[in-house]
Length: 130
Image (cartoon, rainbow, N blue to C red; front, side, top):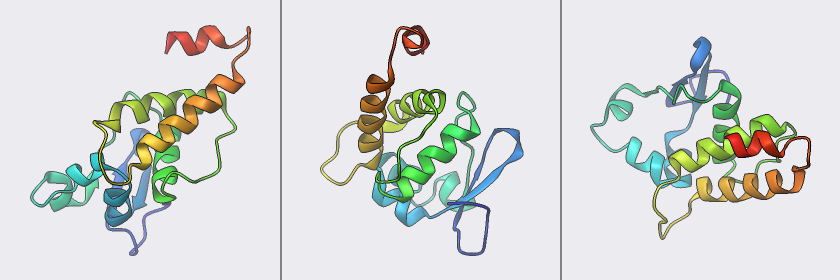
């Protein structure tokens, strides 16, 4: 995951014009959502371009891609704002449970635990409003 290079076979066009390269193989292995997205003949499969959900910031998309390329084992995020947004993004792309590996579910669970641990009187309203 990172700036687009010849080693990437998929490009994410993030809000604000940023582009991040990734691996279809790793993403499809990590998540049933991306496996479906990259099925033969889909626009994403043919063009190699993914236009992520505009409801989420580039930071949240980068965090999800980092986590998925690490199969859900990347270091946790420091920013509560990005953790909350990543939690919402992971919930949106999570889909039904599958028999195989699902790093999106792992990311969701890690974010949920981290958000719960960091809640206090000063920030709990922000979490509820999401």
